[in-house]
Length: 218
Image 1: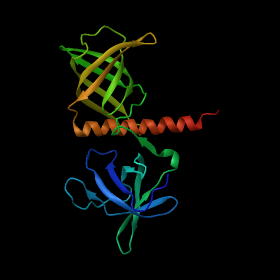
Image 2 (image 1 turned 120 degrees about the vertical axis):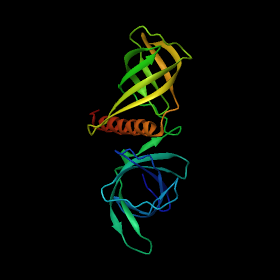
Image 3 (image 1 turned 90 degrees about the vertical axis):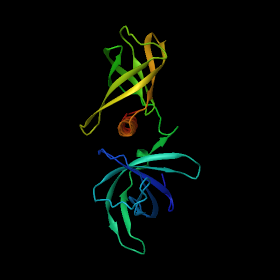
Image 4 (image 1 turned 60 degrees about the horizontal axis):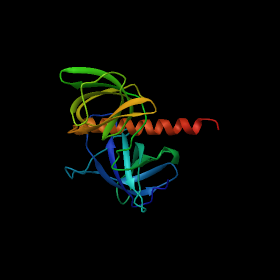
């Protein structure tokens, strides 16, 4: 994946509680790195000063209107006519295509506690996205389609971190498929920080699944 000079990037910190978004532009490049101008916080409009080793999730749009994301790290700085920051560029197979505003569903099992009518039940997900979740229903439940429930979602990251996301959700449908019962739920009023945790988790799992597929012998 070629990052052309002039490409606009949005940087979001990873492994931190910050929810800021930083806008910057690619001004130089080489085989393993790109150089960006000093990024600006999209909300405060202030210049952000990045420390070496800081890790980010970068997103950008191509000329064909496609969106991609990749993990990156600050490698250093370079002096020139414009001060520049050097960012690591991963191999092409570590770029993830983004669809529907990042609401891409990832098939993965995470533990979920569902609260409804003062009763809590434990379930496991079939898939998850930043917009909702699909649960395996293996027991009787009190909720039905149209109800609002409270979810506690356990997100285990590959580096050992664990996050707990608590959010309301609407029960969209309860159905059977291939002999199994499922409940499709859409998140409601999710806190921005919690949403970032889910987006980060989905992106990490996508990348992990892609690496496993590429390393699996045909």
